[in-house]
Image (tube, rainbow, N blue to C red; front, side, top):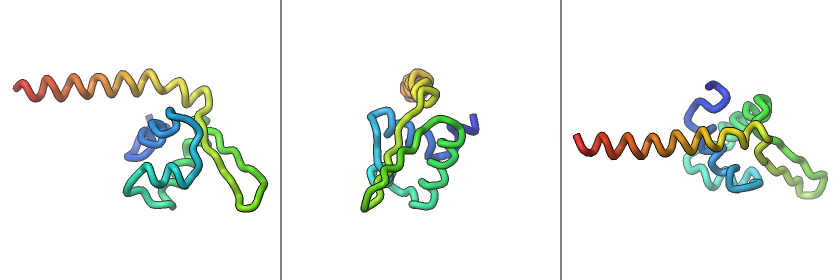
Amino acid sequence: MEAIGGRWKVLILRELFEGVKRFGQLHRALRGITQKMLTQQLREMESDGLIHREVYLQVPPKVEYSLTPLGESLKPVLDAMHAWGKHYLVQKGEQ
């Protein structure tokens, strides 16, 4: 669970489920995250094999992030958690 634990990792995965993203795109999409925290989270996720970091040798430098097959395999799990959360809120609202 550490691989997807914490405040930001699931949100980063959510963004990458939509497709390849650059650092700036992720930073803008994740309101409230600092550049330092985003960098740290991306490095941990890369180390855990969830994301791939592609560096293009050009000026200015270009770096893209995408999901690995292992990262992609989390989509049904996170979809199920989302569905459970919606169901939970409905049940809680009925009480």
